[in-house]
Image (cartoon, rainbow, N blue to C red; front, side):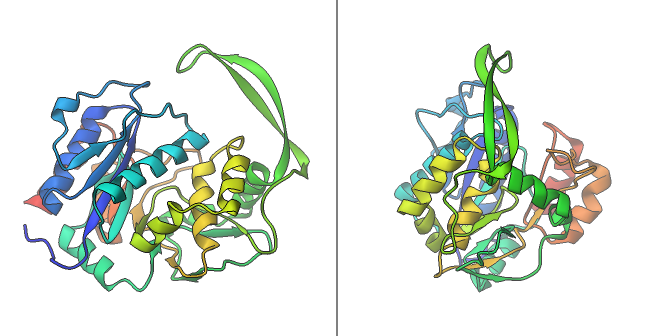
Length: 309
């Protein structure tokens, strides 16, 4: 297949399980984008990875970080991979993917859209609190993330990121025996770094952005470091850190549609696994990527036939 010669794109992949599934994603990206630069963080503490299967255009974050679901360690893993991508290569754009994502648009279509884009990031953004974004926000929200623009979600995010917390230690057994904590969210505001000059924003984790946005993420200010310290003890920081950092950067323009397809059935913590029944709406959506797919799902073969022939 042909690939446009305009914008260049790299990929950041985060995974912690099913390395063979992530290796299939890497193979597909290589076939579609002619071996683009890829920075991959795989949490080796949760599952092994045969590094002999990793091709030279893929750079692994080493040593890997121990990550946890809904923990700030996921943000640290992403930033480590992003820094690796931009110190090793210098793509115009990067796409953040999980190992359970898969391409759903041709490379030509994606690259042409990125080359013509009048924004610096395709990022799902929602404002929490009175402080308006300093970045310019354009476009409509991704329709597959409509469940996020509800009063229930806003109350939950206010509880997660603003309210005071009380932690009680407890013993956890998964994924290993360890001392954890149970969090009680208090009905009063806690200490936080947000102000009339540094607003709070949140949204879906997965996004695409250009070199200018990468530079903002990789050049933390005092406010960014305060935000990181605050979110270290909060749940789902990966749905707040990127949005808050980028929306408080006045030189950026952000499109609300992150160009990802997902199906949320019931508003739970995870989107549903996509199957062959979802193939028509996936292809009709114009999304660049979709999630989540089960390892070896037959619909992945259907996507290969559609995108690769």
